Image (cartoon, rainbow, N blue to C red):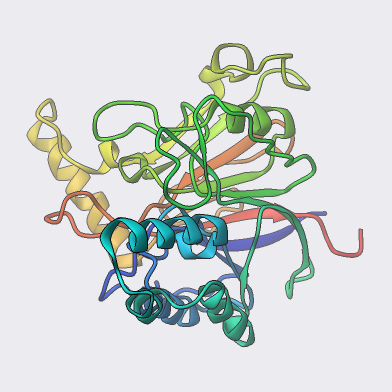
Length: 328
């Protein structure tokens, strides 16, 4: 019998000052990358303090493209470019960004606070609640420039070997799922979508596309993915549910006065909780969505930083799903 496991999920905090963790206990906390804005040591320290304040016995973290000093090769390339092109003194670089490997050392020192930096690959954990958690993590995102950290050029192959994972943590979204940018373009990765469609994890969390904040419960067609997975062939749209998005909480010009009021009341209720919860056990007072392992995947875009200063930060997520017991 599965064990109910609570996850606190956030992403793209970008070392913003004044962010606080929700006052809720979780079995696992997850940060999906972009802990910093410019990958400075001071920014990492700010984000690590936020992570330390979270009430969870284990805190799993991946890098994002902004966290380029964690990508040693990308960091070296940037430093060489800065020194040769702009004649920036190496001592000034080390003062702000540290030596190669310094940012990773900060995470090694934070291990005593149960903060674990995950590199790309599959990781296994036996949790304090008795559950076994298998995670696939990847900080890599597609880019046209590929000059930040953990990026590959669009069109290049990237192997997301996530078979067998209960939870997938990536920095960027899969193509077509909570990935609509401010310019109305799809910012997700098609290779990642295909990998998720084939493996069908229970939960896939990410960030990167700030306007894509939200959650969607997708129901898959059939017992296994098609040869070339796509939204048309592999998603049962009629049985899938858009749980929450910025559009469902923010008023639009098409909303009636009553609809605007209902959205304002809903957002106020969520802010009072300090998070947005969705689960299949019924403990969420706002909404409950059943999840069938192997047939459904819950997708969560947890980008905290808002592109609109007037709206303030987006809410993190608290999600409860079932995990197999460690002794199974």
